[in-house]
Image 1 (cartoon, rainbow, N blue to C red):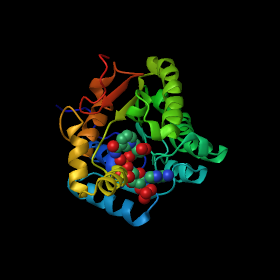
Image 2 (image 1 turned 60 degrees about the horizontal axis):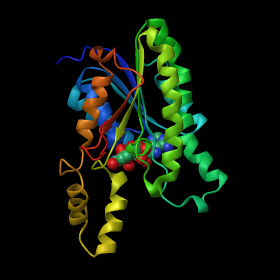
Image 3 (image 1 turned 135 degrees about the vertical axis):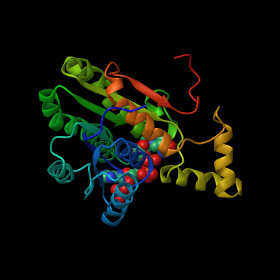
Length: 259
Ligand code: NAP
């Protein structure tokens, strides 16, 4: 299926690897000119060059911390009026709420709620002027089913989700859609620490810890960043103009509810 977005521009945050990279690759494969952001300069430059070689499209790397004012300014300087915005950032650390300080909460809110809201605020007017725009926020299944040790994520991402539910309806008439993609367990570096902890606790190898995790998922495997990216690209496509304000779970069937 031709997604009908060749020649569009996209700003994809937190994209040198993992889910963000999956989104950037899938968009570039559709002929979208992509600006990608991550903090580590060597990694984001390498990723940009690889995606550009694979797809033949222009991929602009920006080495910046997207959770900071200066980082967002650098990203927007490189790509001031994207047709497509993919909001993503690192996830907050695990822990217990009794140990979290106000600063811990502010950091989580900055990274996983306010950063996305500010980027939407700063890019949506040109989308409205063009009568076309696509915004996808990478959140987590923790929005739908809280994960006990990830209280900072449960809270901050739920805040973004509530905000998006309102704003998506407000801009629907302008051709701009805003949706959230909710990853379950994907095989990225983010989950490495969890597998290492399981391996250590159960005195097994990391690959065995991964297999154990996969066994708990109805599809019996972890998700791959490439398939996450394809779903993102579809939400950014011409064909997805009637989908807005939605939360799409990608968890291999792990969430047990009917809806
Ligand atoms: P990952 O493989 O560790 O990749 C994270 C990417 O984000 C890297 O490119 C990293 O590069 C970049 N990044 C992190 N913090 C950044 C910042 N402040 N500014 C700019 N770039 C930043 O992680 P992932 O698995 O793709 O996860 C992406 C998001 O999805 C996270 O919020 C995670 O919590 C969430 N999530 C993931 C899963 C999963 O199973 N993988 C499940 C649920 C939710 P630098 O370090 O160089 O900046």
